[in-house]
Image (cartoon, rainbow over the protein chains, first blue to last red):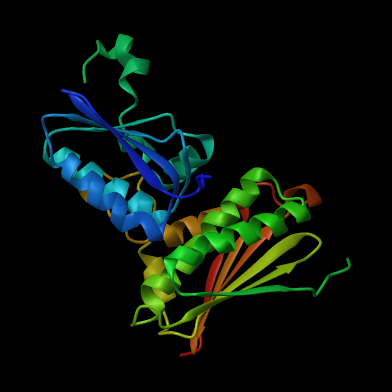
Length: 118
Length: 163
């Protein structure tokens, strides 16, 4: 039986974007692994980068710190970081730390208002 | 008010892969005490951050030390002590520079200090004793016992540095 708390990343790639599904508990023990996967993708300005947090059961300050680092990389390459399906408990930490305001809402929820721009 | 003196003690290696054992133990105890789901999540994050500080700052060699946790349940609160025997972490100095990211621009963002900020914001009281090692004492009030319902109302951090 798979341990639902064990952190792993499911990777989906299309011609225009990459989506990483973060699954389990992202804490200090998994921070290096997460960073090694997400940082090269963040540097690619040609594709959108989306983090799906539906099955992210826990995140600590090291995980949030990597989100901050990725936000800065995305800005440097002229891109944004899209975060979708955030659970209330993770959203609470994003709000508490002030990271929420830098995260781009998921496009399909805002397509009408934003004209579908990515 | 009757105060229990029963304590639960756990010692783990100062290794990140064991922090989830602490979270699971905390969940079990806090559930028995009647804490809400949200309060338990707050404590899980705060205690994990205290353990992170030990792992990242207290010991100079990997696999060198241990983290001693003591959970003391009271009628109206849970007190959690997180101790190490490593190099004292200059908590007071670090706390001075701790702030959330709400008023920043992206290029100004810094991840450092987020863990300490989260401890302060999620617990009702955070007290630090530094000396031979560091002890962080985290307190969460049981909201339905008539205590404060919002952690931010009672946020308090004090350092007691003994050299």
